[in-house]
Length: 291
Ligand code: GLU
Image (cartoon, rainbow, N blue to C red; front, side, top):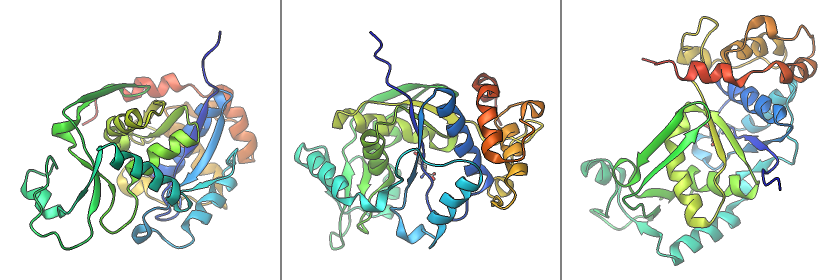
């Protein structure tokens, strides 16, 4: 009997600005992996941090992705509309004794080594954050590109905020609930999120959710294999002229320039690129030592 679930991937931008080369790299990487597995690919807008949000950015990102030939296979999920579901999960965690109110300020935590193991708040007057109780447990997983990655959660992470003191939901809670509710089987995202993954796996376990496969893409590299500078990868891409950026992203994904389809429309180029894309090339680059 075949128990392998059909592949369901996603791209989950935060609407903090226009789509840039680094996020296009993740979008195209996750899109190609999903398409090659004959799977679905969904867009999720992670708009739960209004102080960091730029008005109109989410819509611009969605339109930009479309101009680059990528559209969500299912209705786009907006995290700002999911509060009720997050509240339900939070209540379950609190009722089970896995989450608690915490009045510690950032400064309090920093004063105690930067990791929250128990409450040390000096004043209890403002609103509390809600933290997930993290035990002394090591969680490891096999990442498709980065290999085995483990973290000792108690000493390296500590009790983590799942609802902020300012009332906003924390990314770690929202992402775990949404990946589960959307039935995501494969998370492809940037390597900068590698060390978020063990805590997400821990939370999935508490909530009885299935853990997806993870593939953290290496840092964006240029054609010569050098790391792309931060300023270059944060350079906005031009939806009016998608082909140069797509070609560049293809090479950043460690693919040979001559394999990039000679097409004029991004849809046709991407469609042809599916069969030519070789994730093994990323794997060999990911395992190169980086400084
Ligand atoms: N919203 C996150 C970001 O833009 C990505 C989260 C994820 O892929 O899990 O960095």
